[in-house]
Length: 202
Image (cartoon, rainbow, N blue to C red; front, side):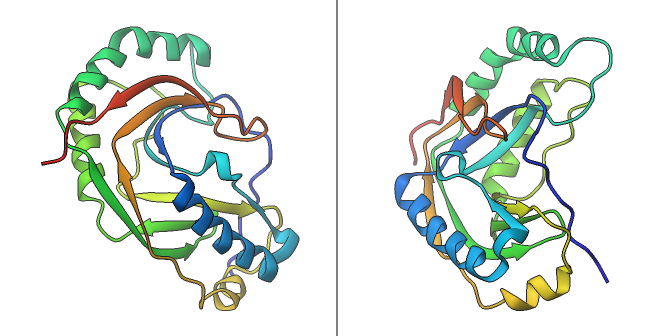
């Protein structure tokens, strides 16, 4: 029997390069979140609407860093790589993400795109010419948005069975990514520090 992993509502300081979802997408996700909440109740907590996003990569993650403080690690990255990241992202045209899968995993409930080619090409290009702080985890090779996490440890298979009928189909047009802090709890107040605009769609 696999139990879900509880995610506390207190994360340490994080910085992400991500795209915030549009109001239209948020409304669809809010409806899906309401369905999950109706079924799973207090066993989950929901990502607030204003924080729904898809991550390109984390710059500073919720982990312990050696040597410099997280803020110092971030300032070093920002000084050396932010402009380069902006130039790389500008070379890629705007694109669309189609979220078509709902996945209840051990750590989170996510919506996922079947095709991650665009984001993975962009990640590879940025990582080829920049360097994340040592201790920051490698970006995932999926395109997703976390819509809920677990407040209680419950049976994963039971949760999956109870929610297997829930579905999503939405398309998000991405024209830019933002360097942000405050996406995670307890703040849930995303602050945009820099905008990295994609090129014109072909």
